[in-house]
Length: 301
Length: 195
Image 1 (cartoon, rainbow over the protein chains, first blue to last red):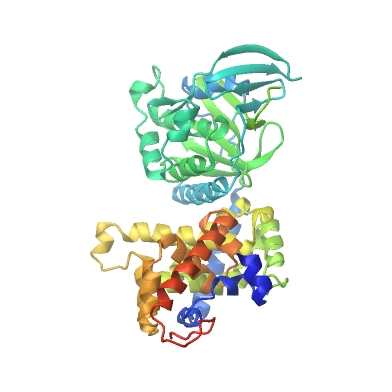
Image 2: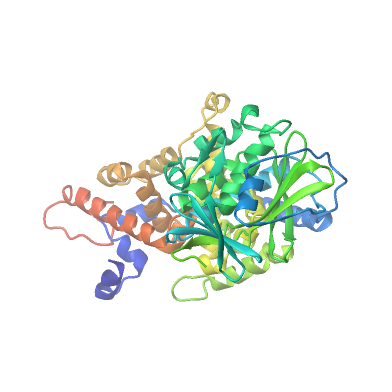
């Protein structure tokens, strides 16, 4: 369309698309006065203040936090799919006040838009790779594990991905709502009944949503919806720019649940979740899931 | 200032990219884009434009690392931030306590009031009102904010091809709707013959 119009008429693409009766009158109706000097000064002062705070605060080492046991799908999925899971000493932000919560909301809404425009891709298998092994999940939820060289060594059934109190298989993810409000309700309604022993239900909800973003074959609209849902979830704050355990740069968010802090590192340019660190059985026993690569493929190995 | 004939502000892209690790590099963007962003807010939330401009810049600064020049221009990204800020403002204003204060909660109300005040032809005004909201938003982003279709797509978070399709459909609807109202014998063109 636009190529034809532009080539045939010599118009710019905008002009061609705005070529309807009254277009000029419409454009004229949008004319406004320039902002006042005071409005511009306020905007500049707001940014300069934020820049000063960022330089002043940076990222600091947090004191030991209360840990608690968390048995969730992240561990199940991470281990089953061959994602690196290891003990780690955690690093966290210094504060999680209103400003940081607002920043988290803005950040996640922006990442949601990045996620929405990521290509969906295609393929028979959902692949998750680490430096040591790979996992290939089919629509029927059969999973084939491979060595680092790509040689299959075990087949099994993949248990699925959880959100709220339900477990979804691949087809279930395709049918899952992409509405952020509905997704948020599912995350917030993660019940004690769906948790294990002394798990914190709120943290479980956050971890499950993060896991779904990290290693599930969720489409761009679903991933975008989950990011938007997390943007409205209470307890999420921005820590800052960090490097994950293998040196990749990303933005770290933390979720302050009832009994501890969970951290995720997201690559804002791709919306990929690089790493998730959660409390485990004790204060000294943290779990880190590092996602090296995920995506759709037609072949195993 | 635009550095390319296609309207793509590559200087702005480079500035926003460099601001990811250098907060001081962000300030020139405020000078460069504030008038455009303020205009966006004035047209849709006239009573809160100054506040929303400051909020938009704060949020743009906080999330500047989500900008990726390979995915679109700084200008499109900034309008995406502005759109989120406006949406948050509307959500807040839609709360019962705010409604009691008589706030306008739907940006389209403000837009329509502006069209009315500008004495836009009733046929065009109603034709715009009848457009699907997602098409109307793109039309206004291109017409009023002077965004390219790709920038408008980035602003609303959809692929550029989808934006072009919607703009094409919107143009078709407007032409069809307005063709039936125009006086016989008058040509249709970019000029505002319905004004």
